[in-house]
Length: 620
Image (tube, rainbow, N blue to C red; front, top):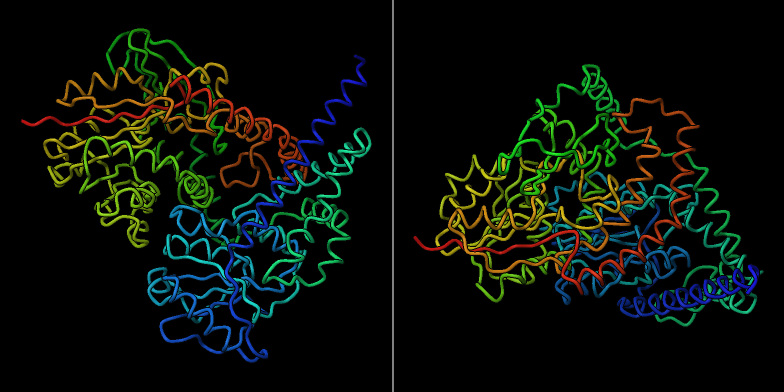
């Protein structure tokens, strides 16, 4: 078989895969559209009026709803037990409607307490209770569609299982503003440059398929071209403006829109003054260098005290791109892997800053919000052994686990403990009942014996002294109580394969990575009985290859606009970063496929990148 024949055959397979993906996406969009309720059509448009008592109508600029529409939306919310309703205009343009249907599954998002809030960005109906708890000010309306998109993400957190969506015929909206498209994507938590690069790559692929595999290429192109009409044409409810025109011009509109987004400079941050202050603070802190953030190197293993550990890897900060280099060493005797030299408390404060909160808060929340299946699997691990009544989640961050675990254990009291301010926000959202902020060993005395369940999910590896954390758990648990721990598995083969680009090394945050056998011995020595250990079931599905691509791309060209960047944010550096991000699009696609295969193998062989352990504190 000649090279040309082999190339043509590969192209046919690619074109066939494109047809399959487009067909599946079209069917999915139709299914999701059918799941959106349609409010009864309202009468003639009139001036906006207040909703019924107990509700607030929040609209983007230029959006109007008549009284009949407001009453229909309020009645729908009361009947369905909703506290937040995103009103989707029936006359929304085709591409905006399709974009919403890619992100929003109305059925799944209604029941998934951790699913991120998505909406059309035009109007929201909000109950008094959620409006009050979220601290909204009725006197300050949203300034743009992007503001409303950010607001629905926030409100979904305050009404995690009481947020709904409805197609609303009696809603007038202005035409979309292409100049604000990138801003609106960022408001949804999506990267405009990467998405535009992916769209351009998809269009180029369709052209290649048309040339090299005309039959399959024509089928893929036709399906892409006609998708708006197929999804929205005969649908019940939406009546997009200019559907035929937009369908006919779809490839050209997609091309011009992607190029426009790539050419659009990053918008100024909403808090420009705060960003300048943050940059000045980082500049002053870095002027003294990073050596002061490290303790002296220790010559022995902190777990078993064996001497002469071996260097496992050295790496810069591939997560945020902050200055500094970090070393992980491995004990030759027990296999414990630890950061050496270890960060000081000031160093931890510096490298954690703007990761889970501040600048990195939205990104962290987006990642944590996509792990509902993992959270429920953790909670389900207790089912054969106990029924938890009082549960303390240590290192809870924003309490995503507790929020999801309520669907498994609805009668359990969930409390959360963390160092960050986010634990108090979790209490205001209702994700936890009581918030504790501080170090677990410091708070253990006042919490002694209060809980029948304590969990530490990807927490112990962040601590300076894991033994002190385990001792605190012994103190807080009542006799017969259960301790649930999940950790990265340092013996994962992917760690050796991917080297510094294996995400679970997570430098500089991870201080200790202990094999499961070491942890079992430490717990047994403290009076625990090991009930179950899971490896394959605890595997993090996107933690290997997808994470490696992200770390490599970020490490190659760190964000020059970050306030800790030590290089000037010139147009050339911004362009280089955009180019690298664009070139990684095919790599992300390949990484997703590899991670899917890796997950299947991990489940089948009971070996993955993490492990989960359940232990019982014995009586006496």
